[in-house]
Length: 495
Image (cartoon, rainbow, N blue to C red; front, side):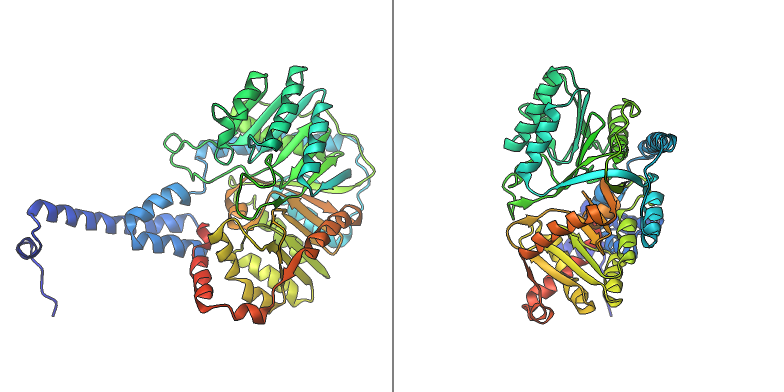
């Protein structure tokens, strides 16, 4: 029978005085109050079951630490006023794009009937139509990307708009900044938007931001962290997009940041990126995406009607911006829609693989119906915990028939998907819960064999530099490694 521990016993046994005992009792009582009050908060947020269980587990394990982490990382909102303002800007600019495209004679769209559902799915998410007459040059070398971007900026006559997650003061960053500075000094209107956290060095006193501002460039921070003023919004809601729009006629989008391939000496270097140089009507949609983000952060409403990109001898494309301002704006929907279209082959490359259950099921279902599903990941990742959470699912996927390959020469940072040689996706979004739910991302869909085949060729080169995983060998890994990966995967909804 458990003996009742009285206050006098605690004082005699442990030397606690009455005041300390009162504080301990208050500490314990408040802890249980936090636990009880957080249950409806978690349920109200309508997390996926795994995320809800993870948060409740942390809160019940230690209510004060759990509550603090939730306030910093759990609320995936920007604050009601900012969300409403962002939605109004999105509605404004995307309505302008739709009106402009309907006013001109659109080129004939030749999209196979099998991919019409994908067009509707992407338009439902993005509110942007599929457009024909576009061309893309894929750039899978960092030096070539920088050369082309700098050359286009040096030829700019009206506007240079840059939106990047990272903009470092290294050789790459300084080359691009120099081109922007030259453009500004000859009268070109230049605007640069950089993520406030990932690109924080850009805004330092000795960073590139102040130097560009002195040259007349408009510089702004995307998603600045101000938790008190913004009701403690999630501090890791980031603008992860990579976008350049020049004179409203040329655009660059993809995975490439404005940084050297070593990414500041990060693990796994060199990083292997992929971006596309785009021309044609699709550039007007990308110009609207920049205008939305710029107006959201600065209040300056840009005119996106001044330039009408010329129709090219090219194929159909669709821009899909996604972000945390709406549950419907999910890259997951686009990804799963593409996997559902697959009948013969699907190839996916991503540096970060932290899938949720719907993504795992979609990959397995594609393999079940005879689709050759190839998943290319870095052999040497830069985030140890993220990689471990992904590895925990390898055996399940390989048992279902998904083929997993590890890229050896560096960190494969390209984010691409190809399906049956007729549909492709590239952009900034990873196959993880952050890109699905938290980050502002930018993806571009390509329809038809002409543009998709070019991306398939690049993926084939990546595949040649990969080593395949074998299920039997993988299952013979040391038990400690398997258990560690499985334990870390429990935190997947929070990574």
